[in-house]
Structures are given as structure tokens and as C-alpha cells.
Amino acid sequence: MNILPRISHFFIMSLLIAFSFNSYADPALYKIEKNGVNSYLFGTVHVGDASMKGLPKNVTDAIDDSEQVIVEVDISKLTPIEMQQRSMPFMMLTNGKTLQTELSKQNYNKLKDYFAKKSIDIAMFNSLKPWAVMITMMQIEFQNAGYSDKTGIDKQVLAYAKTKDIKVGELETLEQQLQMFDGMDLLNNEMIEETFEQLADIETYFIKLVNAWKNGDMKTLTDYYNKSFDDSNYGEISEQVMLINRNNNWIKQLTPRLANEQLFIAVGALHLPEQYGLLKQLQDKGFTVTRL
Image (cartoon, rainbow, N blue to C red):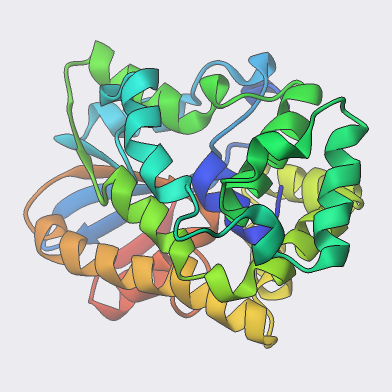
């Protein structure tokens, strides 16, 4: 979801976008239908720049046609202070552990050098889990490139729903999202190594993926999915923890509702493709899925 290292995709809510909606084909929007009840599924990106303001008309029309908007987590109901208070307990190391004890000497030194070049003392991160430090790195790079979650699609969907007085629901809590990262603790070094690798190849892990999302190019998004979640130990575990488990849980929640309610579902774009993706799982449940 993220653009993007696998893990940052889900917390910072990856998949960046940096172009005006008026300048390209619309991102992929799907109609989900069964027994005459229509709902919508929209693969989103979570951070972007000022040029992306304004949802495509087919998206706003779909929201208008829905009884409720469903997102991963409804962050609009949380203040920045509440977000921090609820997040910090999950981000902090305990039992005498430090960032240095959780990483190899080589990776710790790479982090130290990275922050030193930005005039930041790594000591300020000593009590944070490696994934929390990685998130800080991504936030720095996003901000330097002019991107922010303030102009992300999710926030625009939530804001539009509010103006229309449409009820908002969520598929999981903030705490559930944060707990997900603990499932990756044994792969701290692999996580940091991949972050550095992908930051060093922005063309592959940013520009191409951005272009695919903005054009609704599901083939390229699927190719990226398979490249990210390969058959390595890290690829398989991260796919299971961050995508498969969550998709399966969401399908259990959504299936009975989609048969009776008109919903607009907005989730990170990488939750849509492949055999465990929402599109195929919904089709397997007897829903008709149509690209709009």
C-alpha cells in the first residue's frame, strides 16, 4: 500500500501519486454486484502532493451512490495527539532492547550514516523498533520530495463523505495495523536492507508504480506485487502478514454486508490484485466484479 518498500506501504500508506487527476486516465474503480445490490471498490494511494487535489468524478459519483464509505482505518476521527498516544506503545522497544541490539552492526552503521547526513543524531531513535525508524526514514524522503498524507486519496475520500454526511466505517483499528509490524520482528535486518535498496532506485520503486496507479494499470501493479512479495523468506512472510491475513479478514467482514448494503470501499491498491487479492476473492464468493 505503502513507493515503496512493502512495509511502509501499509503504515504511511504507501503508493504515492504526484500528478493532477485531470491529466490522466482514472485510477481503477470497480463495481461489485450481487442480487441486484451494487457496491464499489477503489484501490487508493495514501500520500501525494498538492496537484492531486480533487477526486475523479466517477469516484465521487460512486460515493454518492453508496450508503456507507469503508476505509482501512478512519484516521479522520483521530487528532494528531490521539494518534501519537495510541501509536507510541507499539513503536517502543522494551526489556532493555535498543535499536543497536536489534540490528546487525552493518545495518546500524548504515542508519547512523544516513541520519548523520541529515544532521540527525541516531541516538534519538535508540528506543524505537526498527520498523518505526524505517517509517521515519520514509517520511523524511516523502517530505523532501514534496509528498504528504494530507493530500492522500484516503483523506480526500473521507473528507468528501463528511461533506455529504455519509457514514464512515473501518475494516481494522489503528492498533491492529500497528500490531501487524510485530509479526516482522525477526526480519528487522532484511527490512532495513530493502528500504535502503528501494530508496536507491526511485525510478523502479516510485515513478513506475506511480504511473501504473494513476493510469489504473493493474497489470503493472500486479507485476510489482509479484516482485515485492517473491518466494524469499522475507517476501513470503511479509505477504502473509501484511496482505493475505488482512485481505482474508476483510472478506469475512465484507461478504455478508455486500449482499445487502451499498458500500464504497477504499483500500490500498496492492490489496486488489492476485489470487489472495480482494477482486478474486469477491469473484470466488459469487460477486460480479466490473471495471468502471
